[in-house]
Image (cartoon, rainbow, N blue to C red):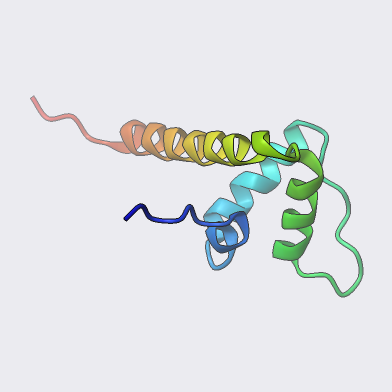
Length: 86
């Protein structure tokens, strides 16, 4: 049986590094709004993502691509810090 994809909320909550990355990505695209008084950072990021992501059938694909970009970022970051020994 196929595993259900993790929601964007579950994917972000409790992962500060992912939150920082999403925050920067939204800022780079000009899509990050101010956090309202009493609103947590995670809730603000999720709200901004919900505004930025398309609706309908394209939404799942957009979330999949976002998570893929995160994995590429982490892999690149890991490879840049790796020590190559000859």
